[in-house]
Length: 495
Image (cartoon, rainbow, N blue to C red; front, side):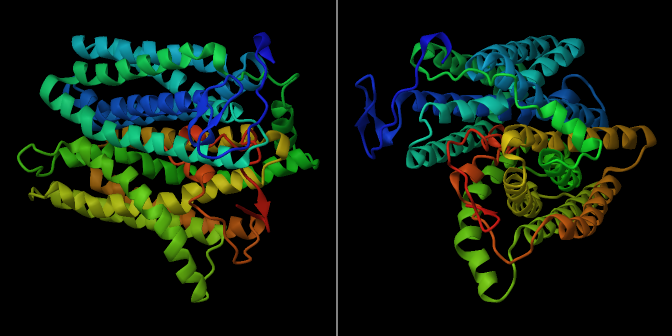
């Protein structure tokens, strides 16, 4: 253990118990866990809060063209989802989780405060520097926070670990939901600098809370010599036939089809916000960014509905709800969502007045697609990854989001230069997603066993992965290896 900090002996208890320091354990969880859950809620508010207003800030304050603003938003998101690889490496092989969270969290906080100053002075250079720091910081801590909370519980108490991940997931959704409601309202009344200052202040508060528990945490040391990730990746690309290389290659072939989905999905925070700004919004009572709250709310409502009602009903009627069918169906639903979005855009391009609530059908459809594709993709990346590389494969899973965001940035930058109308770009996205769904059916035959069995989408460990974006759910897609026995395989599926 690092710096003389030792792991408390596991306490198997429910309700309220005492930890090794004599303190009360609410819900059977150590006080340090509650501290980490609170910090995660504040950090998610900060991330989704600044992101909610970023596209309109780039257009209205910095004077960017719509296509340039969408590209900038996409590249910022891409950085946030590629930097987890660096954070995972620093955490697992160099610094340990606590030091990584403190160091990269500070980079994140500096970036947000720099964004406040850039907004106050309308500085494009300051904004670019701020977004670089934010992307590195928020992505760098993604693989660390959820696993650090699980470290506080230990490997011997699976029930407590499940409760922790349920709370962690709830904190993600509370933070993101409140941010979508509050930050745009602050922007409308006080301007962009004040609106960016709110997430910056809450993140600073969260880091202060986190650091104040320094002497109370269980802090595991980095792995001696690392997990051999780089070597395994090289062998996989070189056609190696050892178990690690073959496993990585199989996972990689499936994950390679996910970037197109993320290219569409993350347009909720950019293109769809711009679209909402052009719609009737009840005389300014509903800000264009605020409709984004529908996604996390729908996730909370639809996840148990799919698990308890829809999937069992389909199975009773003889329809398979296995992983490949869910992912393929989700891709088709995402395509339909963008056909709907393009149809709305056509009406706007014709000069018709369209109420902002007409965005709800496309938001509903993309949320259903998220449940079908994102959750199942997480399950696949965990269950099929080599055991020693599960954390790194989870970071690679996040990397598919980064690739999708880069594709979106390039697409809209090119569309702006070529003068291609936005409805046509949305139709093209829908067609690309549909083509990807057909390609996925071929890949699925090689990498999935379609035996009709499924894994529950509502388990806390799986739900924690829905951020994001997200969800990122996105910060908790790396819990696999460190989950303390939370995730198990049964009949080839995650339970």
